[in-house]
Amino acid sequence: MALLVSGTGLPATSTAATHDTPHLPKTVNAPGTWSDDEASTGRLAAIGVAMRTRPSGLNGKRESPELFGVSATDGRSRWVELPGVGRDVLGLSTWMALSPDGRWLAWARVETTNADSIDETTELLGWAVMSTMNRKVRNLDAPAGGRIRGTLADLVFSGDSRHLLASYESADAPRTKGHEFVAWDVTDGTPTVLEKPGHYWLPNPGSAPDALVWARGRTVYRQDPVSGKRASYALSGNVVTASWSPNDTSFAYISQPADLGGGQWVLHAGRSVEEARHHRVPLDVDPEELLGWRDDRHVVVGHFRRNVQVVDVVTGTVVTIDMAGRGKIFNAPLLATDLWQRPLGSVAKPSGTSDPRGPLRWAGGAIAVLLGGFLLLRLRRAPRSRSTIMTP
Picture (tube, rainbow, N blue to C red):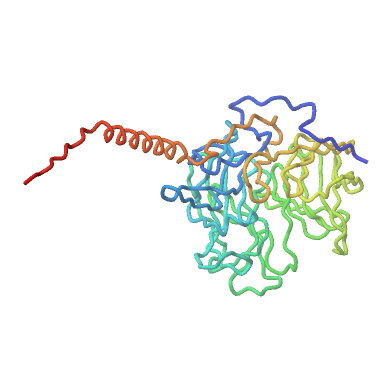
């Protein structure tokens, strides 16, 4: 069995991060629910959705789910405003993405409707990517144009942060085998079709330092984005996701039973694809995500919670990191996965955790008391009028 260690222990190569070095925070905090802090330019370490509260009148308040980002330099959480993004999209983390380097945000552009939520039947206008460095937005469209609809597949960036990958269907496509898998260059919007319609299941995206990666069934595909050259690797079990380490010297993947009978998912890892194929790493939690690499020997495994496991692909030793911080956060935050290769950094204390009208109410009450006391004093000091008795 692997050793499970609870706490913030990390591989020996990790030391304290400096304030200005881009890093992941030790914990992910939401902004204070009453905070007015808005994110400026700069790399983001994480994004999430939390409840934001605004004053309404003297005593009322309005609450709504809002997107927030954690700065990769100062560790402070601030609200992030995305053009054209409604609260219905915010509720679906699969319709949003943060690039591994923290320099890009992406989201689905949704047709405005009066619906309470969106699903795979919702019509899309396309997608958008925004640079966190200058806030400029580029709209991305389907290669063939026309009206399209979503598939609820994950919206993800490639491992090198240069491409955005998405699956979609044309509005007139059949409900079965009608989806298309495309990668867009985030700098110029050029699309590359990775898979045309015809597959029954959606592809499962993965990552590599310099390639486009996805899995289908037992096979992992790796394609060079420039030459288009594609390699394939046959593995054991149906592949949920696969990832090559930063220097291409290690490989990890998560598999599920081939019969899709609901069996336990398994982490495979090793110094090569062949070694990983035969090396099952036992864990005390179900592996469901590959969230990046600390280095070429340690892969980060997630399970859609706010703690993660750092797994040594050679020994199978596991260290658990609990990243849960302050605030009511919906779902697990999305992390800039490249930053796992750097030491975890300090966390800024959230501001705006209390109603800003508190001091105003206190001051108003104090003024009212003082004013009442002043008026009472004036009445007591006012001269009394003398009564005059009239006699005939």
